[in-house]
Length: 437
Image 1 (tube, rainbow, N blue to C red):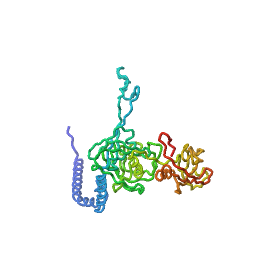
Image 2 (image 1 turned 180 degrees about the vertical axis):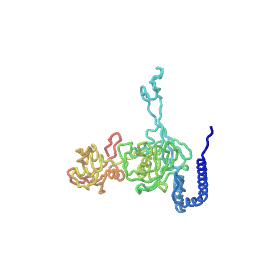
Image 3 (image 1 turned 90 degrees about the vertical axis):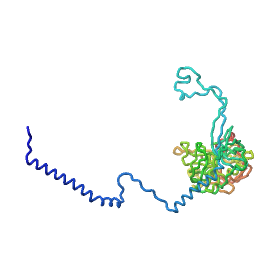
């Protein structure tokens, strides 16, 4: 059966086809005519096209480029000049074998101590000699082969080796240590012509913001340089090796990591201003808060250690804390009173013999404990004492055992008094608690 199309249907189809052809031709012609205009408009428009577009890097001016190049060259010069003086220290510490069976770690063998089939030795044999190995950094102190590092780097070391930047490995011996300042001196037998001591700076003149450079061996990566600024000065921190504190410590944001300990912290003249010693970090790696023992403490301590002698610090024999405004208010002192509150007095110490009094009251306010009632030291030898750090720094920097000092006190009853104290040498670490200063 054949289907016939009506005349009207054919006419409508032809009209539709003509209209479609007109639209196609119009679009093509419009595109041809408008393309140059659209290109010019796109080039002139500040608007960015959709999606990420790579932007050209900003170019430095000639003067800015010269400044940056000079800074880079300075860092490289400091590194190249200091590198022959910096060393990598490798140590071995003998661990005494334990008597009896060693503890078994079930995490190492999920089948239990006798293996998967119920037989075999439950414990490994204890070796007759076992060594723990570690490393740190140091720097050449003099032409006689003395090298300065941290005490904790060589603590209890039975074998010490020093690796120089030229690849030479030399055995070293420990000649002196000072746990209180976390300092140690080791000695190598190497010709004086091959030893290049670093120049010492002055840590008393440092200012926050100054550029510093650390050279050391972080994580075993030999002779690495990091840089930053001095973040703070005058910090007081525990050495970690004794109950006493180190005053005037330098804080820096230069990356200090395990293995940097004992290495030099340099200023932009390439002078040693500190000895890198520790960091504050939740992870154990650099978090931008590193500390260095000031070189001026090393200036006093190191010559004594080289002689094989023990450096003696003056000892007052107190536990102290900076007087806060809250404690001053509780003790009914003027609100602007500043000083070091005596919390505890060590028995038979210079402070005890001079009649200093420690705190005898504890007040709890909103869950916070406050110790009250002790003497407040507001001056020493006519120099104001505003914090406990001030007192520690003065005793460390300005006094020696046997010195007689005047302490200006505010007694627990509010009266002012001046007493004289004859300082002694610090007792051995085992004879003193953490609180005694």
